[in-house]
Length: 208
Image (cartoon, rainbow, N blue to C red; front, side, top):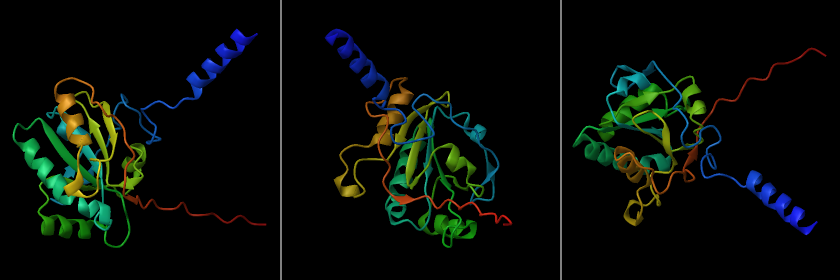
């Protein structure tokens, strides 16, 4: 009897213990195929699809916006990361804004990109379907995709919102590991930032 009880307890723990993948992101897990997207307008006047980056061995998708203070804190870091990737051209950063509130609309995005000198594609997800498919809940929130467009990292860019206190660059580490064909030491962390401003579904009135 005691042996059977211990076995049952062990099996219960096995099935209820959370896995690292999908622990914080409720839509994607490590190893999942990246949800496809197409026709997202960029601040440069072009439309972008996931397939447009097929020549890149690694793709960093960041869900961000203009107005969130946390997202603003990471703008320069995104610029610097893009510069670093440009050295060998194997990886690229793509920023997506799904917010549809004042200060985050497409004209505001164009102004922000010009003001800050964004050197990466900055796209507007007006339908918010891409952000939902990727499980984005905060700005900024990062998803790293490998050459086969499988998810290899989910979460925050690094371990501190204060750039002077960063000790671990999760996104950069994940990219470097993916380019080597290896698994990153850290594959998922909780994103830190402002909540994505998803539109609330309209309530329909029913006749009594």
